[in-house]
Length: 322
Image 1 (cartoon, helix red, strand yellow):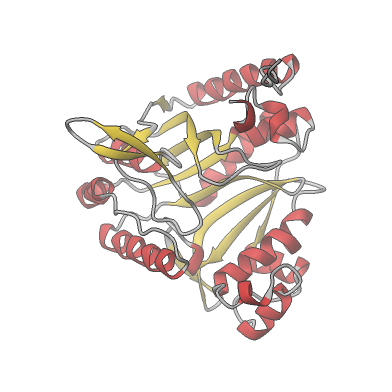
Image 2: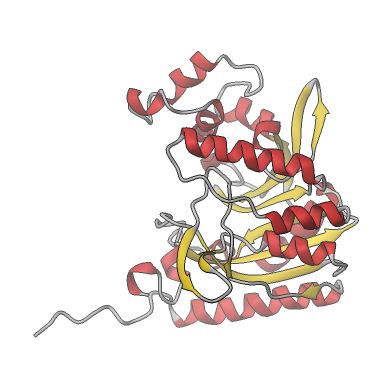
């Protein structure tokens, strides 16, 4: 007799019910604030240039397009809606990232993304707090800068530490041949993941903000204490990263330069260079309104609600049972 496949869901009935209540809570939260719920393509013509993300290709053969990508985020399409005059919007969507499977990752996962016109990053952090803490019934977060978190938990100042010392600190996690190809930001990411993140939000939720400008991605940049920092934030609860938010960059030329820099990093890392999404650049050129946006992992939020450390406990069918 053939081995029977694992057909049963990994999430309990209680988790499935809690997911439904969470979705209703989110929609009610935004309905009270008069945000428009939107839907954008899960399958798009372009992937992302972000060096630390890998899109999943789709084999499409249609009259208008050959090949495409499952979206890592609805961001670019939502920014096109914003430029077209949608006003503040939100979306609950399925997104996809290649190679991500573990206790906190599944290649397909649920994301809540929203954009607030007229908000800066601090105003959006307040709204994130209201949503997350309202659902989890937990204390409001404190705010700590990236620099201070690194000093407190990794024992280095990320803005002035010598690269030799930075690499020395990372030797405990990587082989020498792996270290030699790692960039400065790659070393900082390693320290953040292993030395800092496990300590974040263990007593009360915490926002980390003022990331180095080199980690700005799609955020604006300002100078603080003589160093360029990004208007970017992440929320941590019990060592788990929940969201990533920005006061959004609106300059199309600067965004193109960042896309091109991303591709240079991808090439240096031996990754495929990605075609730049000209549609989102055209939207920025037309005029993206002053806004802030954030992407929040709904599966991780549910993990915290259910008190589990394994994402499979809140997914009906993770990858191995899909």
